Length: 172
Image (cartoon, rainbow, N blue to C red; front, side, top):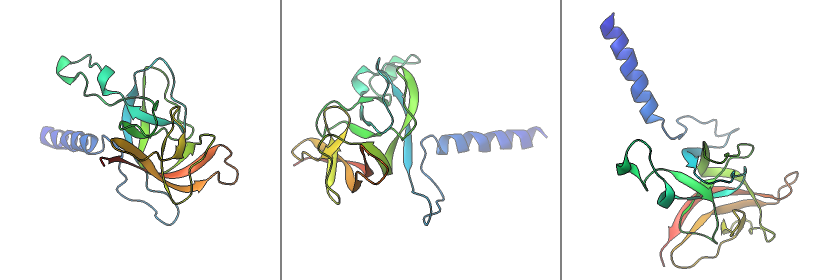
């Protein structure tokens, strides 16, 4: 009996590690989008609203369990620079991340993203504006595009664009 319990415990432990970040293993491709998410921590004094672009904040991440992990934990803040090299992903619609709290961001797949006053252009690469909203990408050296605009200002979603999230660094 002890061996069976140990085996079950080992399986649960392995499953927990395998799905630490959330990459779907099976998706109803006809009816549901495939969205990859990552667990993050908002280390800032301000909540990150749903639909907002987040950027990595490794510099201020401080692990309380080991100083060896300082500056390596997946902390995020609201994107504060145009097409910033540290663009991480988007906070899912309806899932704000409170200040100093854990949450999740979409790192790949379609998402509703808050628009800047100049929304992105459909079928074009888009990036972050200085306030965490999406706009046409300011491609240049050492920037990151957020993804590709699927639909700018879709019907019933005033102030949002649908973007296929896939942060990509641009080196040249």
